[in-house]
Image (cartoon, rainbow, N blue to C red):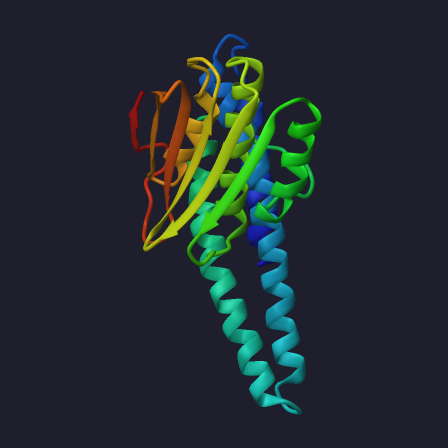
Length: 230
């Protein structure tokens, strides 16, 4: 597992040397930014997996049931890490990555909303369904909400916004509706939706503007694919 983490770092370093993004290429720059975040998340998850397997081995003799549960958790973490690693690989084919530090999860949304409220955007929030956590999924949903609110405030001159998360079978729907004007700056949202084989719809609605994104939470996804309207 340590070799796998090291290999991931080598690949990202090699791509960095081979590819130098054109500053005018917004798509490439956005993919590089996303890859930077995901690289760090996956490397951290693989480290946690290694520790879990080691802990299970140590306690196997004195507490077999606890050891079995630890190994089951490690197995599930391994599956998630491999899925996320495939997503990172898809991005690395079009860009580079470097480590950045801990990345936000959905638990950080209240603090994000407070920052926007301080900037003059009143933000409401509602969540439906049973949350299915996963670091890359949560990071992507967080960034989608963040970008939609930034666009609402800076490009739509909105004063109010409402964020919804709806967890359904096999997907999460992220919605951000505001009272601002129309806008087109949704590049980062589109790239993150494509990472999960999802879709983006955006446009004027009821005197305001709405962004609605679907991210697939189960099964195999297609790197940098998806559907887009609006």
